Image (cartoon, rainbow, N blue to C red; front, side, top):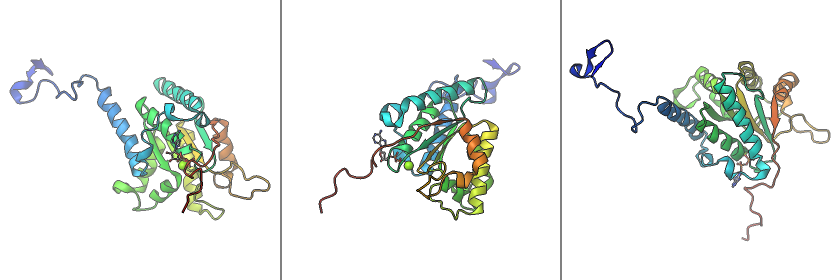
Length: 244
Ligand SMILES: Nc1ncnc2c1ncn2[C@@H]1O[C@H](COP(=O)(O)OP(=O)(O)O)[C@@H](O)[C@H]1O
Ligand SMILES: [Mg+2]
């Protein structure tokens, strides 16, 4: 068979055709989509969240608003096809501990990675740790960590402002603002889950997300966001007290 300017590649010891990969070598999108899924699975494994890899929209309860998640994902996939900025950039998932937030946003990530988006998962506190010198897995530099989580089409940022209090360091604030702001500026979608309120409420003096992000950035984020509040009992807590 003659290829590439008429040279007979088989005589040069070069196979005339690429080795078939699962019999589908013609379709370059196949290995690409496999690579995308592996990026997503890798980020879930780095977060020790393998047990959330099986969740799909069909497994979620109505309280986890699977239809809202599905519709938003549809809009992100459409925007990517048109190489346009998604109309609604953010999904904010507040709710009490154990209500099913992580399962919901992981279902979103699982489905998104199968629909052609480059998706990554990270817990907010883990991101901050990994941004410290020599603290990331796989020998990633702090710069590579930022690049990874700023450049993906969809970031699942779990437990926004979790494990923080009023004494959050300047480092934590600066890094969080940089990540959120860079993704907004680049028009990249982010799904946030959080146990916190947006702004601390009269009578409940706890930290609000605003105390870390600041009012300006939080307002910009909210200006292009769906709110998916998940309320329900703590699924991890046994319904009846253990008898012992
Ligand atoms: N729809 C669901 N069906 C079955 N188990 C679920 C569902 N949603 C969440 N869970 C389980 O309930 C527990 C708490 O859910 P999780 O999403 O981790 O809560 P949160 O992130 O709000 O604290 C986890 O063990 C999770 O696997
Ligand atoms: Mg969670």
